[in-house]
Image (cartoon, rainbow, N blue to C red; front, side):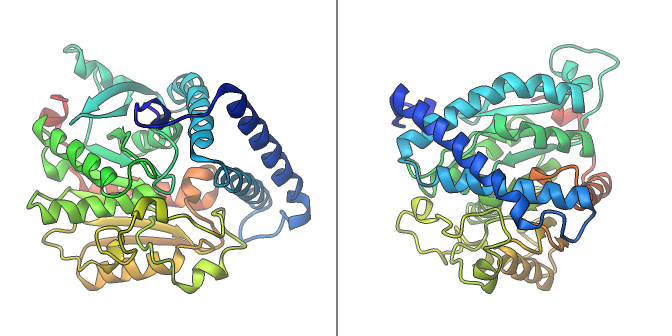
Length: 371
């Protein structure tokens, strides 16, 4: 389900939606036309990676800059069209590239998308002796600044996680702002988490993961579980998490010219009156303790706007003796492993994830086969 399909969400008329999509195409073409004037060959990596980074930066900037200027009903209608395109393209793509099968499911009343190695899916329908064992379950909360995108749009990255880790991934289709501000997304994530426990998955075999706004939501979920007296997950994996909504660090302005994010990052629709320094939405202000905060993997780019806040967050986890594996990649922007999976910097992240997955989250085949 994309947000436009929810009965509470308003959408635009057909003509307005068409104009919005045409405008998006024009904006992205304009962004790409700027690439040759931005010295795309210069950067911290090789020529191909540098050019790829320049093209990606301008494309995403153009997309986000245009999208943020649309009325919400036009944004939702355009988002639905992109979602429909992904529904056609992504299933055969991830099966071909990663050997992953996508299936719809509803867990705890929250719709979402399972990404599982095709060799393991028979475990859910019969007793095929050739089935591949699933190691653990990743509850993935997709990015989008708390306001946009959908599970199918993240299926390529989630499928990469399946291939890298050997785990299964459920991308939750949580409610988003401005129609559903905080705490709707956190409550949806908590419902999925508790329902997974109800299906027989033990907490130590669940990894909560997310990127950007979804990374902030994943961290907020951990704090929410602690407040409710629920068991912590086995691990937390965060990619450029939006965990400090005060947006008051020097990198917010210093890296604005290098990042893919818009210089005017929107957080008001999600907060809806909640103070941005509230620890429920900005986990950087929480007091993590290894008793309730799980071992954490976190990566971010040295040129991204959220850099300083994530640095501080990682340092706070380490000072609190929470097992932490932190990677800051010089010269990279926001959520680079998702936007540039071919880059050497992203491959470094994937190798670290593979090593951590093999060493820190054990298999629980009896539990995972009950999903």
